[in-house]
Structure formats: C-alpha cells, structure tokens
Picture 1: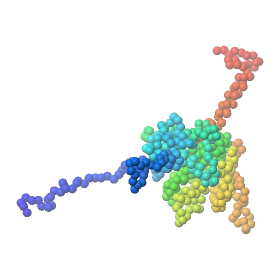
Picture 2 (picture 1 turned 90 degrees about the vertical axis):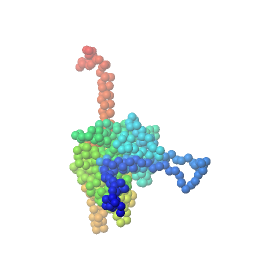
Picture 3 (picture 1 turned 135 degrees about the vertical axis):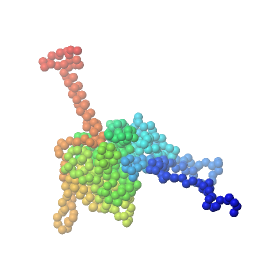
Picture 4 (picture 1 turned 180 degrees about the vertical axis):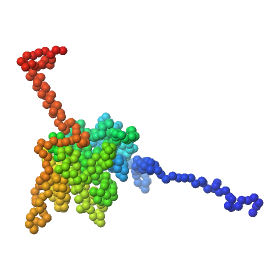
Length: 500
C-alpha cells in the first residue's frame, strides 16, 4: 500500500450515493385533490381498431354518431355533501342531454346560471363547488327521479308518460330548474304556476366562515329529489297539493317527497352496497338512508337530517301538522321496506345489495300505482294502503308482503288490524275486504303547513288568488251600485262631493 492512501473505512462515499431526503406521505387535502382530479379526467376518444390498417385515402363508411346520442356522464353528489362516505361520483344518464344541461322534459331556468356546455364526448363533468357543477348536479337528480318513476310504470305494464301539471296537447313546456333561484333563503319549492323548481342558499346563523359556510340546497340529493317528487305527484293528482284538502292528503304529498329521496338512493347499486355495508344488511341500524337532508338539518342546529324515516310516530300523536303526519306514512313505508328486504334476503344465493335494489324497485312502483289509483280529491292514508294491498295480490306476491303492509300501518294507527277468521280450517287467515281507518281526519280539519318545505307554503296552493279576486269583485259591485269616484253615499241617499 502506498504511503498516504486512505483506508477503506476512511473513504468518503457521500459523493457516490444521493442524500436521503424526507418524503412525506400524502396529506388528506392532497388525496382529496388527487381523487377529484381523477374524477375530472376524461377518457380519450376512440381511435378505431389499431389492428386495422387503412391507407391515407380511405374514408369511413358512415359518419360517426353524435356524442349526445349515447347519453351523458355527469359528476354529481350521490347524497348530501355532508355524507362523506358517498361524496361525488360519476353517473350515467342514458338519454340525450344538450347544453344547459337540458332535455325534452327538464330545462334550466332563465335568467340563471350560464348554460353548461358538454365536452367533446357529450359529457358534463365539471369542477365541484362551482355554479356549473351545481347546474349539472341538480339537473341529474331531477332527471334520475323522473326516469325512476317512468321505469316503475313500464315495469308494471303501464306505458304512460308522467306529465307535468301544465302539460297538454298544446303545452309541452319542460320543468324549469333554478339551482340558485332563492338567494339567501333557507328553503326550496316547486311552483305549478311558474312551472319550475327553485332552490335556496344561505349562511347558517352563528356559523363562522362567511361564503365558505354557505349551504346550497340544490347540492342536496335528498332536497332535489323531494321537490321533484312534488312536481311528479302534482302532475298525477293536481287537487292534492291544495291547502284546503284534508290533512292526510297533504301528508301524502310530503311523505312521497321523502320516500322519493330514499327510493332514488336505492335505485343506484352503489348506494345499495353502501347501505348494506353500513348496516350489515339491517336497515334499522343507523344509516344515512333514513336521514333526510342531513346538511340542512345540521345547519338548523340538529344532529341529523330534517326528518328521520326510521321513526315510530303514530297518527294519534301527529295531529294536523303536515310534516308530523307525513312522517307517520314515511315511517310505515320504511318499515315495510325493511320487512320485505329481510324476507327476501338470502346471502347464500344472492347478493344483499342486489336484493335491496330489487325490493326497493318493487315497493316504489307499488306505491306509485296505489297513488294513481287513489281518489282524485281528499285522499287518505287508508285509500293508499288498500290500493297497495290490492295490487300486491294482483301481482301474485307472497302473502307475507300484504302482512307487512297491514301490520306496519296498523301499528301506526292508520288502519284497524283485521280480525282472524274463526274456525279450525281458517286458522291464521284474515277477514277479507278493505281495511278500515283507525284514526281519521276530523270533519273540516285544516292542514297545518308550518315547518313544511317551501312548496307547501306557496300562496298559489292556498287559493289566495281566489280570495283576492272575490275581494276585488265585491269592490267593483259596490262601486257600480253606489256611486262614482270622488263621491260617497250617506244614509238618505244624497250624493255629497268629497272635499279635496
């Protein structure tokens, strides 16, 4: 070894190996941003079969189809924004969707958010927390709601449209949707006279954060579905929405709105899977499915949504307050859903989420058909219950289905539990015939619509225009028979000029 040479343990190897640097794990904000970026990515346009060689002069045999002919992909909230386990996801709308977004039945209100243009593939995948995203999300929920009920009718062999209330052979106007239609208003509504849905936004009282804390009702999957349900049912039963109808009729309208939010969630397999996983296939366990409008309810100071479908209210407890009455019907239907799901569930042979999807589809169609068959005026809960029992029998469903309906509505004081037939040969069989009501609206009972959604409180459903017209007509009759402007009448019928 030469003099002055370094020993191996004295060699400086720092130049040969790069320094070790600290590499942090992805933070929660980064992961959220990365996930969002992946959602916003669009697949490339198909370039044809790469195995087929084509010369420069070859031309396609036929022109390619327009992108909107294949439907549209959208990015939307699949539940309320506060339901973290669901969040934003892509969804597919199979029908043609044009800029707006709009189609033949649903259109954006004007003036409003600038029309959202589809991308080159005909899709509406936009950045969340923007007006464009809110317009797309709101349209998507309205469209999914209408499509869901249209499919329910087709599944029952009823090839009929679900018109909006104003639609006639000469008026096929679509439903106008205003995602930002009620600035600084803690509500949303469906208006028949305006032919629209309008959604409010607000900053909750006492909440810090300014605009960042603003709550947009149009972003709530539940609220949009609820208000759309008012529009769907008003097209079927126009008299039901009027405030002078009996309290139970108003309860049917509000219950249909809440049940629509539940049925729309269960019309999507990913949400069925989430609910099954969250509850271990027991629908009476805590789940976002039964909470209606979670974010709105929290903003008002509650710990859950505005209402909970998994409740035990009875008609004897509800009085005439429409929201309380509606929760009786909603709760009974939720119990029937849970009973039917438990009856049909068999994990050995079928996936639980698929069973829940199938059971919910039948139950929503059953309810819709019973509502259509109910009286056009002054419908009661027992009218709809008897309609469901009749349809279940006509559909050839198991006798257990009818038993679930009877038992749950009897438990809520809606109907009297029928008596079993006497005799050994009739053991376990129930007396035939329609069920009779147990708790009825009192004669002349008026609906109490306080605390209801904006729809139920619009003047147009209180016939206020008739009151104003009658007052104006009374004034006109008095003027015609008692004098002219500038004159008044005294008891001896002398006309005395009015001093100025």
